Length: 396
Image (tube, rainbow, N blue to C red; front, side):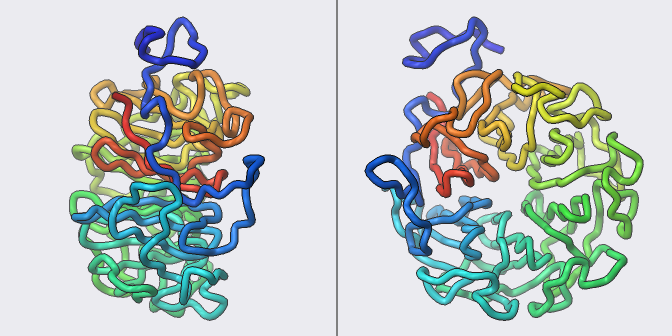
């Protein structure tokens, strides 16, 4: 890690060896959904255009660009047509409910082409929008970014049609066309990647699907398309996963947040066979270890504790180290087996953890961040435990 002078990190206690600030020291530029009373305590989380309940997905996409938030607890997707520049700015569009003041799984009715049951991962290439509708065990695809409230999706994956909502389509046997508790989605290099979390695998479509129920082309985390064993049934190693949650792709490298094994798996190039082993992992000293924080109560520069979110910003891989309530950054150029983090946000040091640093939420604190998305010098954070989304600029 790099030495940091007092002038570069004011008003915070320093250790002799300190990480670089990952994000601006002053905290988030904009905070959305952050409603508290005069004592700093959260107000009731009634659905409205400016409230959220446990958001677990964020995405920045399009020309404007637009901001998408999976407001998971209210079972809806919120959209800001332009990046908001004021705290608690109301969203412009909502999908999943008939209006901003309603909530409930599948809009308190049957599953359809514009309903959600615990939406989580959100992805876009600026044209297509993808949402992992986790508890409906499906992925919804809009071929163009939505322009009206409750705009129906065009394609569904994981189910035969928009009315299906059972894990693995209600069958005992899974396949390349089924999903189970899918929590994450990514569009990269013309492919669609989905974290099929309950089946302990990542599915890959080599091109963006255009047909309902279209089967995937590749599975990572299992040796074939019909197995769903924890860690591929052979224990922790280079193949299996436990609770994969998000995927990021950078210059051909595939990186998966394997939350249940407290690590990030990295493939140095795009695999071409089911069950291809990863090249190395971050967060553990080897490919066979799985303990959170490497078996210790407190973290360190190499440890992870249930990492859920990943993003690439500039020359760094950013990881939402969720159960440690922090974000950690690693230089992409130095990425290798068990590489240490050299940048930090949300905590005062790399050996410290604690929701909101064991205090009330501030503009530079985190509580169980589940998802992150990078756009230029800006990071959007689903700060789930604080029921808010933060737009936080990179450190200068």
